[in-house]
Image 1: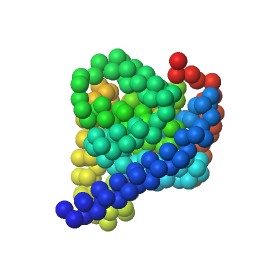
Image 2: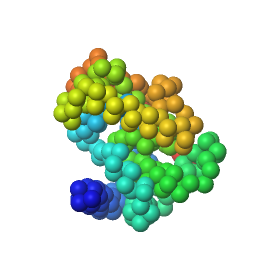
Image 3: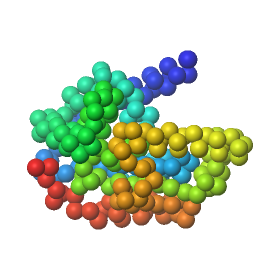
Length: 234
């Protein structure tokens, strides 16, 4: 219980720092330019977290991992604090996105999904960010984000988990199977889609064939090749 509370406090501290940063930067935005984001979906053990951290460092953009997005989405109070950092134009953009996803997916009323959509939309409205997990690539319009799917064969993923958590092959495989099942069920439930369907992404990377440096360079090339500033939400 103590460990959980410490983790929760740590996440809240990160969120508070980010909210403060957004408030300070609110007046510095150049409104006619889109501030794109990268969304990352991944099979467990594929090395997506390492890739995300390196991309964040190389591109000098904020990183929101699965735990941070999840914590914000679960808390109505924190969600509202995040939404409050948006100005009038960005709030209008967020409303457009929420309306579009409800219409496209025929979503039923769900408090968690509403908070999740608002949080992801707020992060995207601020832009210059990487968002890992929670179906963010299904929430945001494809025109404003580069949607990545990071994969690897099971044996590669098992070795990665064994190394990261110092567990046996059997334990690593068990963890991967459970996590993968949970992630696929989440995407199916909320977005009626298949997590591992490459059609839903702009770029799919198999990390069995690329080291971190090579994978980062591929993503950066794709990111920098997009005509981001030609897109208008209207």
